[in-house]
Length: 457
Image 1 (cartoon, one colour):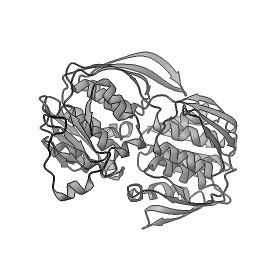
Image 2 (tube, rainbow, N blue to C red):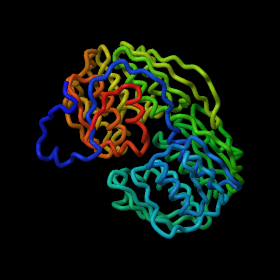
Image 3 (cartoon, rainbow, N blue to C red):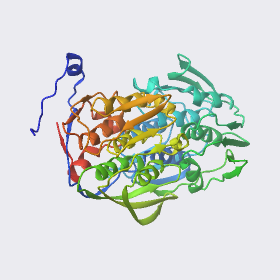
């Protein structure tokens, strides 16, 4: 097979090609050892909380990505002192809860929904005016799910078309504590409310019907902030008193389990492969995809258990496996909401038909991710259907036909998943734009090549 195979493209497809497009070709015998970059969710939160602590915090293992840089730049604009060295070690001199200054220009969040939503919560209980902007993709993601509960603190928001960025924010001068029961399972909404509660006198309470990723709660404790967590009547209650003090920390960020899922799945589906991935976060609110892979018969051995940033980490040894089909229940979505695209790649190589249920939240990610999964699978010859927000995938252990050009629509997870799919396809897959991968996993292509992936420009 030639290094640069010919693909048939129409003019519209040619127009979307970029200098960061990439061919992914059939690969086997992956081997080696890699370290996954720092967890994105924890990186965002550590920057914010360190900026609100009194004193100097040191963060190592911070994810060096465009999303995280948006949080750094925004917190600098709000008055925090942040210094990064060449090893991406981060020193932050916090300014204390309640001390945010009014930024001189709009806060630009690029493609980062997490940064935008968390910092919306933070500024909503400070008496300052801020403007939030983002790229085309972020400006199409709903924000009222965040601003609606924040209004009850006393903040005012002016949203574009009632739901989107850009947003003008007028923070509450005298914020009022709230009790909020979550209508949708969203760690971003929960964390936005928690950050708003930090500068609010009195008790802020959040009630969850479904438990979502709990990094904010864990980090509150790590920074010495008293928080009460209870389970009553089948619901989770999170409560704390505002306007206390966050302590500075020295903290090391564990590896991102969502990023690790890409080489993990590659190691499982590429023939005669055996790889090791070090220092991967293991958290019950984030391990949905690993439960699914275990249910599918994946060969993954966990070793070298450690504790980092109040979280558990493991090294993972992954070997090629024959995967069984799976029926993924809707209630597993909160623990793997970002991981459906790469799980779909695993399902495409399973020995039967898999069903992913209850995926309505995928329609409001960086793109309509449910449609994005359907497109990159079906264009490469995998029988895929969508029925009532359920995704049905007919697996084929021989691998898909491949040969398609995939438009990522600025969605980094569609880009990375398409690249992994190309590694088991009969014909190479071309991804139109890999630049978007820098939002979460800048070294993805380098690390996959290190393991033996056949990727070419």
